[in-house]
Length: 594
Image (cartoon, rainbow, N blue to C red; front, side, top):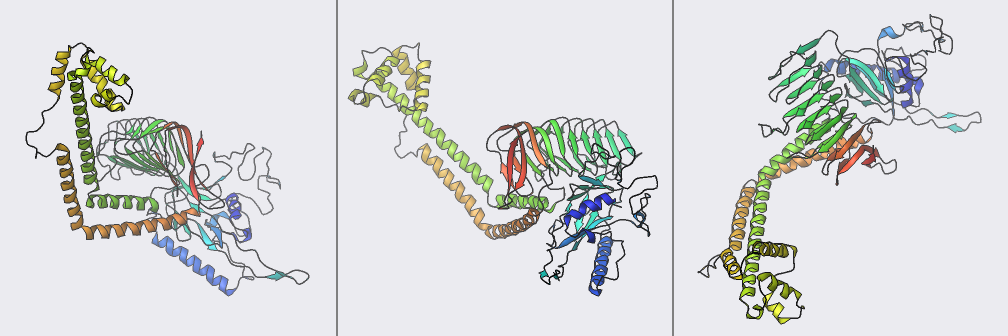
């Protein structure tokens, strides 16, 4: 059961805290109308139906997080928390006097208050003042539910003037890590300790099961299935790319290159991922980690996908070409792009969130559409065409310069100047209106032309003029005898047009399939926009940021719940967080220095 401290804290979610009561409390009877009693009975029946349907609470979370503007919160607890005469199980009576001689103000002789809060603001279990913790609960247990508020009735003051009731305020409660929301009911997704973070986010923290520590010396090379599902695994070897490990918590003293599904925390004293490409082309990342708790890494993270319901702590790790989704944010050393993709960092969403699923589905369908439209093939053909055309232009450009140098050597007007270099210097020294310069100097004053000219002059520096003439003549390709011979430039253009026409015909043949897939993507993107509008009502929890202590390379992608940001230039020692403008309600990523 949630302690009184939690219930009093949650009362700030509504302006009617007196109506905030446990589900097991009895109705007053006198003041309730028949309609209200019927409503409460209906809500209780709905809760029972949800509990019966949730035989497997680990199902995908319902991300329909929108709540009515008229709501209040009811916490679920057991009957053992409060007895009939108002005496709770801890011996605390209604007037604040406990059985151990606790005085009226709730302060005992040792300076400890009723809820276990000591003088320095830290409670007994190490939780912060803003976190409220209950006892251990089982997977599937109901934690809380939202009850829609009701409009009050108008009254009159002592002079008979009408008094309008205040409108019920919105009760904001988010489903955090280890919690799923089914309608208006919040259920525990895992067994553990329920915690209310900052008065707005309900989470369940996994509690290690004592006595279930499994020590493994060798590496894991296969799918362990449910062998270690509820155990704390201590592994001194590695988790290879072919391995799949399901466990409660993991302490790894080696590299992690396979797949890990964990309900607790992960601590890796080694690398995550490798530069090796996945054998399956449909899998973008060989290493895949899904963790409900936090993840600590001591070395590099390379070509991996990491999803955690906690935070990623990688103070000495450089993330290379990986995707990291951390609900509570992350701290890493640096971010670099991989060979095939940039690094992507996201916070504010939990593993299993529908937006993440939609993003993956949209990305997959866009890849299918790209294949049907031959986008990669057309891009490669275009790149080859531009490369071949550029090489041909450079070749013709260099041939023209070589021919011009031979003309300078053979020019009668330049006989008195010894050596090719002296002839070139003489021509460049003439004024622009000189007819000799205009006739013999045809080398453009561009960077590429001057670099090629300097290269030629360097290579012939010690040659006689006669040998220079032979050298340049040998470097010039002979002109084709047949005047109708097609030039290389024309041939390159013809091959490109023919290849492009072939791809366009293939695209036309699959136009119906392409149109159908485009409509599917539009529908998914519309659904995603709808989910984003729901998430706008629930800002990212306080403190969820991305900190990059060293280099954040250009091209790194930063994502929040709603906003998206691409790093346009390399930065150092920066922090990213998502904020919403109180005026425009626009959500954006902002950058700060650490």
